[in-house]
Image 1 (cartoon, one colour):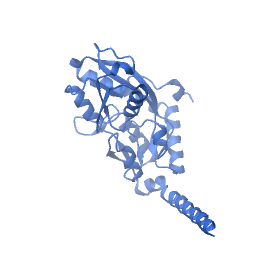
Image 2 (tube, rainbow, N blue to C red):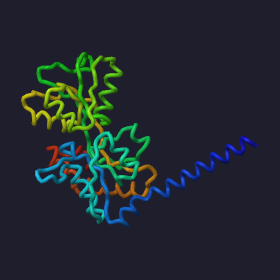
Image 3 (cartoon, rainbow, N blue to C red):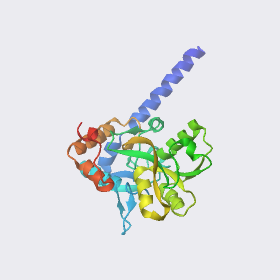
Image 4 (tube, one colour):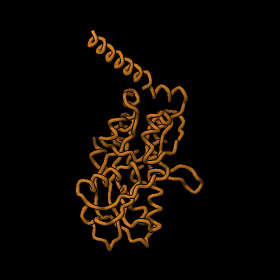
Length: 267
């Protein structure tokens, strides 16, 4: 009797969760009803997101968000996020979708879903030209800066842990703070997306920074809440269409100076 009651209770709970999920996962209808899509973008992470001289949002992810809103026929509202709070903003319904240099990782797949990839993000370690860094062992005794919760953080943590290196990881709350720490000499080595590493090197030439190691190469996609089938299909269709017509490649090339990988644009 107790076993039957327990199984019945579990079945009922599962049914309630499933029904709640299907009821809540109707983002596309919500967007159409309000006539606006709310997109989370990290505007402190150039060239993906940044503020121009007039304090207006710009960058590759901002243009991608504008293209999505245009294709859906709705207005765009941008909600600023950081690398660390992108997922919380999404699952707490403060944004419809995340377009914020969002690398696809197995850890994040446990709590959110992704669209098809619309770009790629190489993750690297950057340091002074006169520093010999070719492997984890070369980081021994150093401090390495990184933005908390980013793929650079994931890859750097994995590298240090698996290698047994005694390097210290210094985590900052976002890319902007990390970049400032580097520019002011608080650390001399940092892990970041390739574009961020290049930007810091360009903005602070006196540091003599160069790329030392590539940690990984991540596909970049839009993040959405789990179980949102209609919205998932819409986002996937948006990516397919705008990869084929070249619009996403045009945005990528404008900000990164190179085309998307051929395998993405010729599918």
